[in-house]
Length: 84
Image (spheres, rainbow, N blue to C red):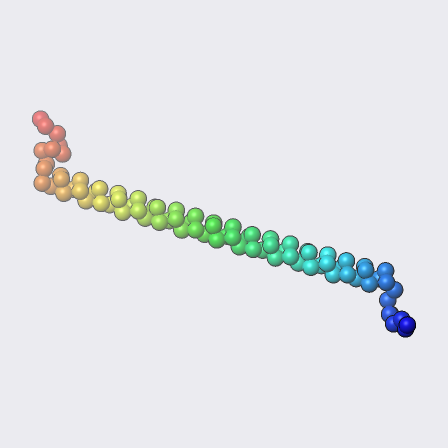
């Protein structure tokens, strides 16, 4: 039986395999960290957008209440100034 002669001894092939696995593991870890950060960025953006939307709702409600109070003051001046 003929044995093929390798340029590298068996021990070096094992080291190369382990090195390749370590490189793949590091790359997978970096990819996972990037995905995690992207998710966090998305949640931060959603939170900011929802905060802006809540502020717009509050400003709209304030404006609406102001209009109602102005209309009541116009049509019911005695109620607004008090009952003397």
